[in-house]
Length: 188
Length: 188
DNA sequence: ATTAGCTGTTGATAAATATCACCAAATCAT
DNA sequence: ATGATTTGGTGATATTTATCAACAGCTAAT
Image 1 (cartoon, rainbow over the protein chains, first blue to last red):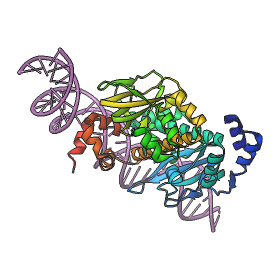
Image 2: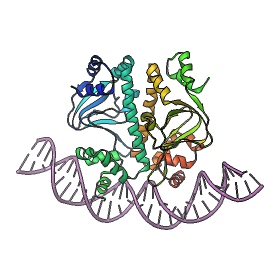
Image 3: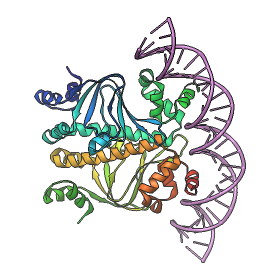
Image 4: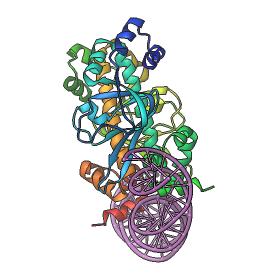
């Protein structure tokens, strides 16, 4: 049936009835090509479930350069997390890469679910654990590897990104300029 | 009374009885100066609560250089997280910086608590959320700031680290060499 | 169809950081 | 107390990466 329902079925032992109830809270959210769905300074009031496409969570540094904090892929869930948890204004923005299909779950509904359905909280905790583990690996690659090594690692682990995303987004994710990325590509 | 109990009192509405029961599962763990308490290749079977000192979670890259994935400060809890969650061998090691006082909670006990005491799971989820947020900030600083900017930020946010830890540990945490850190210090 | 903008490259150069070698001071183990 | 090890610092140089500029091919909007 629906992608979020499949994922709950696979990762929890929740009854069909409860799954239905939960999934009804994931509201379809219409997006336009490259639309910014959360702007810097706004509070991230939802977590987003990506059905199709990519969301890019990005920040801008002191001299106006863009960086990609996270890429949220199909089947994954994410948001501007520090803002979402604190319900304070976000330093990051969230933008669709191309045309996306997105569901969203509000902060209130998520917390209500966590309170009322312990099994959902366990599932949600697992999501955060996995996200945190990804973040740890990213930190490790950033402190211990050269740009070229990080590029090779990403190419090996997520080759799809290179087919589906423009090079500047990849470069912003790796924390290098698009020129450097272009040169790394032609390095043997 | 005890530090972990105080923290539970402050962050949950658990009864004194339950807090007592939970804290009894945090076992004191004797460490020697600079002792490695989890080695690379071992499974991290506990999370560690630091009563005194610092734990350093570190990795070694392909050419044998050390890096510091995380520093766990007094009053904080942590472990080699990817290994702990998966219960598979760790790529990181955990080492005491100097002389430490540490409590530890086993994987089994933690999961039992999460299952039996939903409020504990909420508390634990909050810990992971905060750890994840810290990790996000670290990623952002690594992809968007220069070594000097990262050094200044750390100096501003955690000045204590510079008094309490040797410079090479700080450098490994910033992802730079100790020589570069030494030069950044004398930069105005 | 045409223009304007976006995307990916490449070159020349500058800036940041690492590497290697060495030294002095502090700290530790015996 | 002493010898050994660790720690912090500096210089010379190499390497990595960023910056700035230019350009060709593509894409999208009018």
